[in-house]
Image (cartoon, rainbow, N blue to C red; front, side):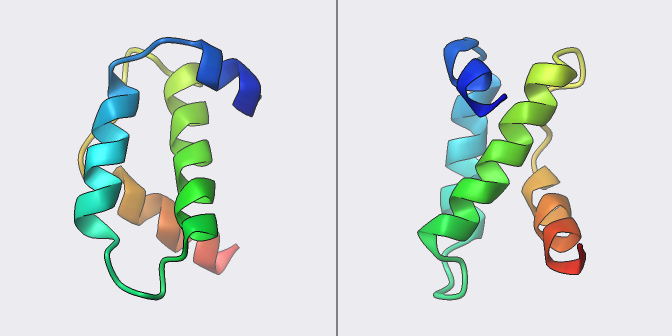
Length: 68
């Protein structure tokens, strides 16, 4: 599904990149962790385009990923 998300043009993807760079600047958030969060968010937007991305969703995804 990640490849399909990359081919699907959505302006929300730019918002994800901006928000990720602003919020996850600590050393704990490696590039692999950021990439995994972006994949989840892009898949969610691809699946639910009417909802889109809301600032702070990356924190929710990170918490869910750390627990699961």
